[in-house]
Image (cartoon, rainbow, N blue to C red):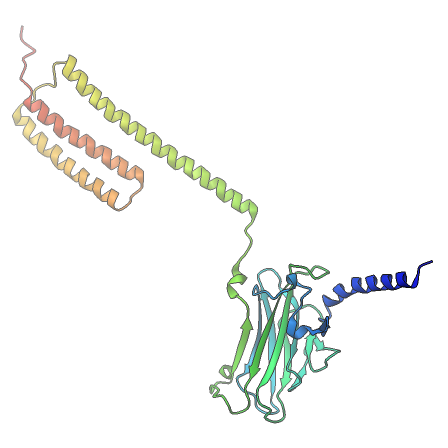
Length: 318
């Protein structure tokens, strides 16, 4: 048989089990939580227990100063990078009269406050200003963007907006009615544009980057190596020609001078083009091609000079 103390313990545990879901119900937040007003302390059972700038809570249609007895329509909105719907609670400390619209309701514990009746967004709430000038009217707005999970968790984001409306005839409103009203918000708008990237897309981009690197580096090493081999082959040919071939053949001055001038002009143009390509950061294969052509033209000038200076040899004598 269970003792009285045991029964009390079981009842207490069951009560604790039902408290957490009650704080996160979709039909509206509770008025109090642990003796504190939820409208002032926030939805501490959501989002790790603290307010988050990741959700932008805003209210539009708010006048700078109220006219006594005037009716205003407020639009309450939630913006979050991942959660599109949620709930709210609005209170004017019973200074005027708040009337719920579609998707909202009066708070049972405090009929002067309004909250959502079901998860949603962009609620329209009517507020009637005090019948007479009572000074500044303060408001508290609590917004909670939820992730749709049955119970409150860290994926929910909430924030609190405190604002006020000045007494009648204390501010200068613009002539246009639309400009006389304002939108007030709290939260970090930059956080709304942070989107999670698809892991598959990230991996595909990484693989493409690796492939591009292999292609670029492969071309660079191939053409550079080929250029080095060509230059080495030319030097090797010059060496063997002098050592075993008796040097370059003689070129008569009547032919060497015009040939040298033509090759010199081409060399100068190609050298200038090569410097321009390097200075303007052209792709390596353009610069490499122009540089190799310039070297070949310069080598041609060198060959013309060497042949013109070479000793004339008669090889057709008997």
